[in-house]
Length: 359
Ligand code: AMP
Image (tube, rainbow, N blue to C red; front, side):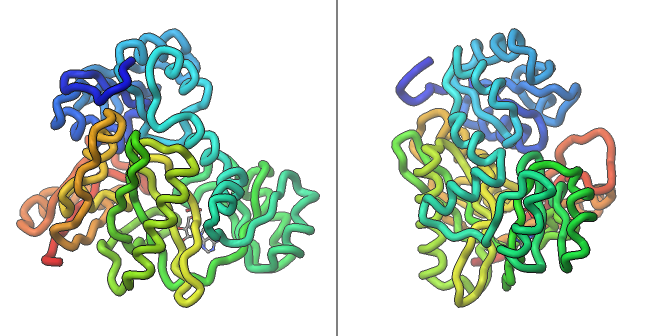
C-alpha cells in the first residue's frame, strides 16, 4: 500500500470485468499501469485487455485476497460488487472509491435518504418494505407512481408502474415481492446526467451535463453537452456533484442521473458510484475522458481537464445493432467502440458509437 501517487508500473485491480472494466483497463494501461481484473464470469470483456485476469466467485475470499494483495489499489466497475468482497480486498490493499460509496448506493432507500441529507432534491419516495406498506405509500405519494426494488435494479429492471390503485397487487408481484420504494412520477422535460470525478484531495471536476434518451429502461443515446443548458443549471449540476461526491467521500468517477423539471429545477433519479454509460462520449470529445480520469483519481494523480473540444452524440449498440459494425466502421464520422462480447443477445450492450461535431 502507498500513500502518495502511484508511480507508473504500479498495479491497479478492478473488481468486475464487463465493458466498463475493459475501457478502464485500456485507459489504465495507457497511463503505464498494470491492470488486473477480477470477475466471476469466465472470458469476460476486460480479461482480454488486462495484464492479468482472475476468475473466481465473489465469495471466494482466498481468491479475492490473492488478487488484491498484488494490487497497489483496487477499484470497481459496478455497484453490485458484494460489500464482503470489498472488505476482503480492503484488508490487503486500498480500495478506491471506498465501501461507503457502494453501501449507500446499493439500496435505493438509503441512497435517496443520503441525497436529501446532502441538500439535493429527489422525487418524493416512500419505504415499501412489505406488501402491507403499499397502500399507505400510495396514499402519501399519489399516482401514477413507480415501485422499484431497493436492491439489484438496473436498466429499468425491478420496476413496475402503478397508474391506479387496482394495479398495486400486480406491481408488487411484478417486482418479485421484494423490499421496495414507491416513487412519485417525475414530470420531466428530459433526462440529464452529470458525470464527475473526485480526487484523493477532494477536488471535484465535472463534464458538462449530457442529455440522455432511454428505451425500455436502457440508455439509447446521449447528446453532450446537453443542448440549451443555461449557466445557472450547469452550475447547479456542479454543486450537486460536489455535494454528493463529498458526502460519499468518493474517490474516482461517479454519475448522477437527473430529471430536468424545467422551472422546478433538477432532481436526482439515482447515483452510480462508477464510470457511467452517459459518460462514454467523454473518451472521444474531451481533454480527459471518464476512464482515464477514474484511473488518475484511483492512482492519486491530479485530475485531467474534462473540458470538451467537440460536441458528441453517443449511440449505444444494443443487441443486433452491433452487427452493423462494418457499415459503422466505414463511416469516417463515427468512432466505433466494441466490447468484445462473444454473443449478441437482445438488450445486451455490445458497443457504442461516438459522433463528434464542432462545439
Ligand atoms: P432507473 O432504473 O431508476 O434509472 O429508471 C429507469 C428509467 O425509468 C429512468 O431513466 C426514467 O426514464 C424512468 N423513471 C424512473 N423513475 C422515474 C420516476 N420517478 N418518474 C418518471 N420516470 C422514471
